[in-house]
Length: 315
Image (cartoon, rainbow, N blue to C red):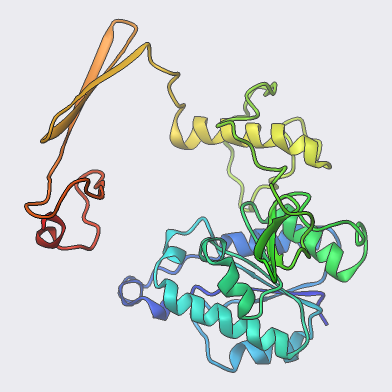
């Protein structure tokens, strides 16, 4: 018997292109969530539908593991979870309904659920986690199943949404649920209006890269101690950002000395100057041949298409 059954809805065979490639991605976010829950003492089972799924497969998993809570946790690291959204959503809804038929609470986290929380809640989800999932899912498990912190309101680490007669409301720091279940509405204390609210944190010297066959512990700080409170996460997140900048993305430049530009009916030109150097770029503007201004704007970055025929856009 498991405390929590974790699942995701990214079935490879929903996407013909991915079937031709046959390079399935592991559900990393789902596995990270499982590791966090297990570390805190919860018994966790996993239903992985990446390669195999049937209408009865999830119900069989419910019968086999007999969980007390179901959590649908998508791999938000994987851009493929943004594809085939309608079919993935239908699969998520069927899992939610199956769990509710079994009398189980359901927590969902995915980019699609964040954008359509009300639909997920109407189809059986009790909570939709918005934003970072690990801490909020852990607190939701404690709240719904009891144990350490079981009487605390959900949402100390992320945010929850719920729905009542007034519609979907945001509660706590990061989950969406129905009818004020997730805590007081009206804001997300865990969110920040600053781009980098950990800029004042002191980050120790970054370690050299080292081979690690296991997923690193996101809560283990550079000094070897563990993040144990919500307040500590702000500076731990800054450490992770510094590591990502050094080994993956590169550092973001500071604000330049000046940015100037010109706009005409056919183009936008921008010039950036800093430390005696300058760089410029131009973006073309194509106005419709018919209709009446003002026109809606469609911005295409890097020349990539967006699925709409050019002729229709220009009309």
